[in-house]
Length: 89
Figure 1 (cartoon, one colour):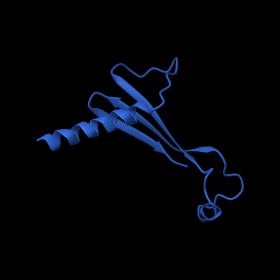
Figure 2 (cartoon, one colour; figure 1 turned 90 degrees about the horizontal axis):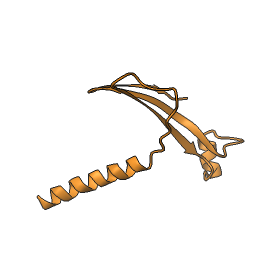
Figure 3 (tube, one colour; figure 1 turned 60 degrees about the vertical axis):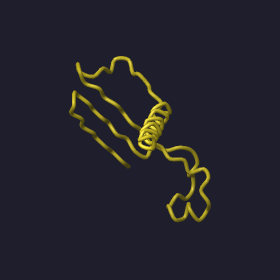
Figure 4 (cartoon, helix red, strand yellow; figure 1 turned 90 degrees about the vertical axis):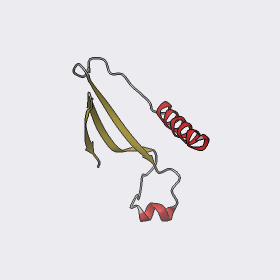
């Protein structure tokens, strides 16, 4: 029982830690319908530390410095229903 409780606490702590690292931005004038919540998730990748071999394998010739948006997800939640719209380049 103690091991199971410890595991549950670890999972909850990991979830709270991950949640605290999410950057949230409120946008004035963009409000969801009553009882609905819209969440935009944007992922990025950074290629600054790739070796030449990795750049060649990934076909990232030329300018591959800096961050890029690689995934955009729109999550809409209303009550117990959720829908997600995804667009990847």
